[in-house]
Length: 315
Image (cartoon, rainbow, N blue to C red; front, side, top):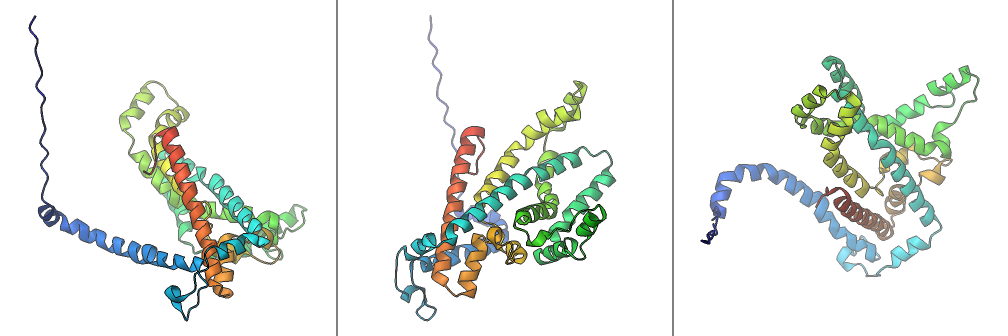
């Protein structure tokens, strides 16, 4: 018998010189330059101020001239009676918001994807998209009007059916529900655009084959749509989980009052009060840095678990 040996084929990869590459693609980098400058100025340069968390900062002495005190402000925060309450309120509000709001954009995108009338679908998409452009201040003002105890539409309806008026905006029991569900109403349409775009990228032949096999709409959603958009869903979930501790300051602060402060006082509002109002810059920087570190840890853990369980991760 004659042995035949296979020769190894080597593939030579041509690497274009850097100068030649930049000469042919400089216009793309020029388009990218404003975004890079924006991120550098507003996200990386301010990180220099993290040093304030480890100092007794004085505006007169500056960051480099202020005395270094180590973890003094972190210890001071955790020793306060409000630390546990603030952290608990932040986690509870963030988790509630994430779990309640995340499915709705996916459901809306699936419903619009199977809408028979294109005109009606466009109308629904526009109507659900518009609240996103309402400012937080206007949104809270609308809530104060609709849920007012004296002249609010909601309490008028409750009185008509024989119920007592409810002080929605001043109740600790109602605060989280008001915060989360108003946020769902405002952001659902905008968030659904991402999933709607992911659905449009699914191969149409899969739907044709499913229709030939007699698959119903629910079966097509289960076996085609959801697996097709699952990488996008997981990516968005990881990014949302990474901001678990970062509850919006403006809305919580505008909805806050003396009667609901037991559940509405979160890290963001607390940092604003002690940092800008009380001028305790180093203490507020330490609290905010603690918040950012927790967000970073959650992001890394969720991303790692997602990579192991679903093979989809940010890195």
